Image (cartoon, rainbow, N blue to C red):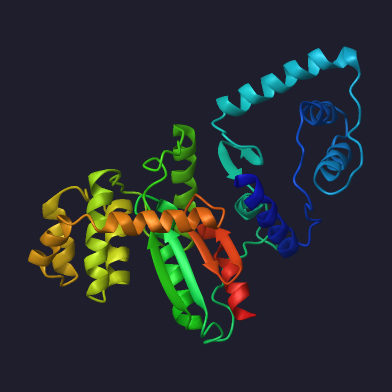
Length: 328
């Protein structure tokens, strides 16, 4: 699913930045990896690397051959590169390491560029000014968002998503799912660490408080999902989600503690005896399971994810794609 989604996502990114898009899934092989490793060792490697990537992702051209006597040394270099990537705390390629900070992917280059210049950026941030289209342009459209209470990216998306849906006057359907680890998808510690640092700088840019954290995994998530259904029935779904996610990602509030839940619900003017009854109800489990199945049918597994008509995007940093679709 990642390979299928990534191709379409990169095509949209390429169009936005005026770059040549990938047009087919790469048949990545040891030969291609060794060829890239060899090209990287050349005095001026960039044109050779670009040609290999183009052959892999866009054309049917052959990958440059590797002589038999080169294979052992190139395999060793590739192995050492992988060890170095892990040592520096990377878990994915397309990760840039500069002066101890890490920038993953094309849409984080603006952070790096700002360390070098105060002027115009080659790769500007695409979600700085949204919503940017005419008010009401999305009337009649249905926008769905799959999110997780434990996802910090979901937390920093929700207030911006609400503003966008209100501006374009489209119907917004909020669909919670269980955290990835609860669904059996592993999240390595190095990935969790990068995510927290990345969310922090994204939150700062959007002026959203973040950083005093109480991980809600387990009982905290269960409590939040149980109360979500009740809050929704009372017409306070948005206010509840903003409060409950801010509590665990910005205020360090333990959502497994009933007293803390009581305080949050009281502030939202939710009837506490009804909330206590909701906490004893497991009906929400069938709802989040249906949402998970829907998410998989869209070819996605991670959150936050958004869908409107045929557009399917993953990530809080893809809200600009939804904005461009609705304004059109």
